[in-house]
Amino acid sequence: MRSCSPPTPICSPACSTAVTNDPSGVVTFVVEAADPADPLPDFIPGQYVSVGATLPDGARQLRQYSLVHAPRDGRLAFTVRPVAATADQPAGEVSNWLTTHVTVGDNLAITLPFGDLTLDTAASTPVVLISAGIGITPMIGILEYLAAGTAQRQVLVAHADRNPDIHPLRTVRRDLVDALPNADLELWYEQPSGDSRTGTLTVSALDLPAEADIYLCGGAGFLQSVRAQLTAAGVPLTRVHSELFSPDDWLLR
Image (tube, rainbow, N blue to C red; front, side, top):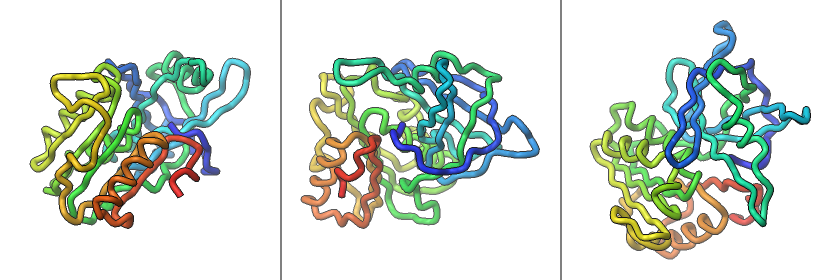
């Protein structure tokens, strides 16, 4: 989810055709055009949509969610993480409304897909996908595309989270990596786990392929740290593509 809403046009209403609950607590919605004569548009792996919600108080809100399926059959899929209230922030109005109220057959207002963290589908260079927390979602969309195609690109996937239980779409990502002929997965959890490294993600521990295109997604602190490590490792920033799940995009300038 992104906190700012770019001024993109709203498409015709989309009808929810599937709602899947992930063990981590996130929910994935699959939608298709409510009117078959006005199909949902195609998109580039890594893009996202804004989803409109009319809340119980009558307020209409837009929130952004990455597309997590490969382009197929006029359907779009996005994953929502409900946000609980903490001492530092209120509960997520839209995320909680979507995950508790929207069921199969409900209509949602969906924007055209947009966003700059997109895979160059014509390239054959290696791909490195580095994410933290819910920043995994655009990476899932890219992996879905790669797994659905015939490309033999080398893929390195790295993800950081607090523990396996809250790692969004963990099994989905593992299955996608296993489906690719030339892919590796590295995991970091803050709390010790048997199948991962412990602590924060460290670029020096990764065997970065030469000439790789590197995609980053996560919170501000995570992106700042990883970008600094990549620069220190001699990776040109022209090969680094990042998306911040926060309105504070100035932090990356």
